[in-house]
Length: 318
Image (tube, rainbow, N blue to C red; front, side, top):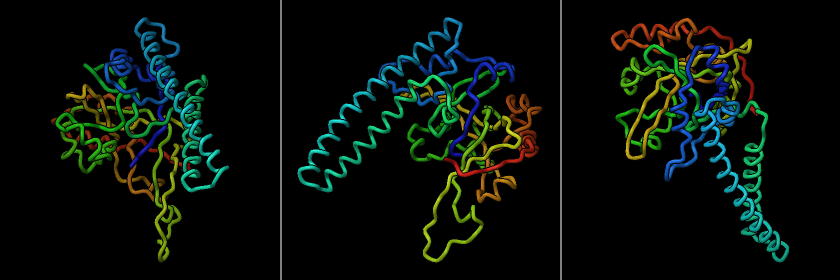
């Protein structure tokens, strides 16, 4: 299952290359400061993509993002203050009488300070790094969909909650960020043939059993271990990953979310020891995919079958 991907979040290029409109209303709603709302989980590249906004609505989104960042930085500063006091107290305790409790407090405080400081540095940094475009389940990404025949870019959470499912399913079924091809006509039937999208991906990541990567059996008594592999197309290029999406409304509010379709792995992924893979579709099928005919599911399966041919190189992720 694709648990993480490095996406394209440059709105200007997405609009130009795919002839899509940016749904500013949806982005404004995502970043709105509604009462009791938590800061949306968005990659830095997605936030920073609005930095050069020229329209009044775009600039208002920038203001909303800056508001969220200011609140988060204040909370991080407070976390560093509290943990620094805890660290000092632990150091004094260890100097007086070493105990396991003090050593644990020292370790925990140090780790929390390090994490908080790293996040602060990311928020203050102006340049983008490759990891700023990486998404994980629960994180938002720009998804290309179709409305009345027009390609539109909307922000959606990477973990799909179907309209007839309760919010608690996010926890009960955490794997719903991927939609298996063999369940498209069953669990995903309310979306398959109805609401399709694509995410533009530059690379993706998979958890692979180390013994499978090394093409060997587990040794007697050996505990299985995982390794994270990054798969990149060769030569480097963007992939249009087939997705399903949903609009959910309930007491918790409104949610746009998506799942990437997965299928049997191509040769390169199987050789690395993984048994599933996201599906890149051909650019010439983009409109047919985004505007599905629910009465002709066979045509949609043919698009998934006749996928974009791509050679994938992999390496252990840092």
